[in-house]
Amino acid sequence: MYQYADRVSYSEVDSNLNLTYFSLVNYMQDCSCFHSDDAGVGVNYLAPLDRGWFVTSYEIHINRLPKYLEKIKITTYPYQVRGMMARRIYTICDEAGEVLVYADSLWVLMDIKNLRPARINEKMIAAYPEDPDRPAFEFRRPKLHYNEEGEKVGTFTVGENYIDTNGHMNNSFYIDVTRRFLPEEGFSSIDISYKKAALLFDELDVYLVKLETGYQVVLKKDDEVFTIVEYK
Image (cartoon, rainbow, N blue to C red; front, side, top):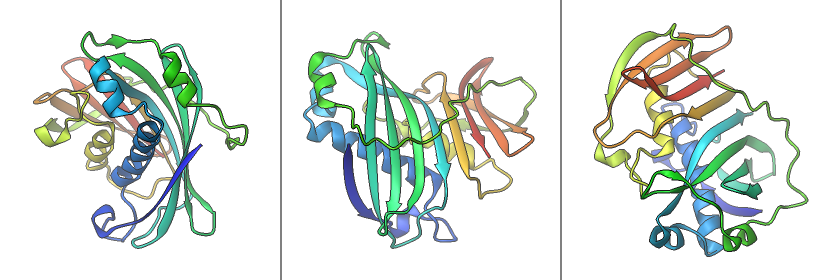
C-alpha cells in the first residue's frame, strides 16, 4: 500500500468547482509514479532498461467528486504482480476517511524499444508486495467492444503536450479528449479500454454511442480502434 495527501487546486476543477475526470485520473497516475519511484523502480530505474508501464484498462467508480480546496488522500494497492502484468486498486478519500472514488486498473510492462511486453524482474516484484488489508471492492471488469454503430462527432490531433515519457499520448488525456464530446456530465462510473497507443500527430476520429445507460466514446484511426471509454 502507498498513500499520499493533497489538496484540490483551482486548476484541477471544473466550473462547478468539482474535480475534473482528467485530474482524477492524474491523481491515480501520480500515486502510482510516486509509489514506484519511492520503491526504487520508477521512471529513473525503468528508462535505462527501455521499460515502461502501459495501462490497458481502468474501472473507476465515483461516489462523489472532490471539491475545490478539499483535502484528500490518494492510496494505491498493487496486486497480482507477475509475468508481464500487474493490477492496482486506487482510492481517493476525504479527511474523514470517506471513500469518494475507487478504481481498479490493469497494467503491462513494455519493452519500449521493441514495443512488446516484457517480463517483470525480481526487483520489481519485491517492490510491490501485496497488502493483506487491500480493500475488497466488487469490480465488474467489463470487456468493452465497439459495434461500429457510433456517430462521428469530431476529430482530434495528438499534440506535443499530450506525449509522455513512454513516447505516446498519456492515459489521462484520453479522458480529457473523450469528455469534451459528452452531451452531459455527472456520471458515477468510467470504464476505459486502451487498445492502441496514440502517437504524436496521430489524427483520431471520435465516435459517440448512446447506451441504455450513459455513453460510449470511441477514438479511431481509419478502421482501427485506439480507445473505448464508457461513461455511466
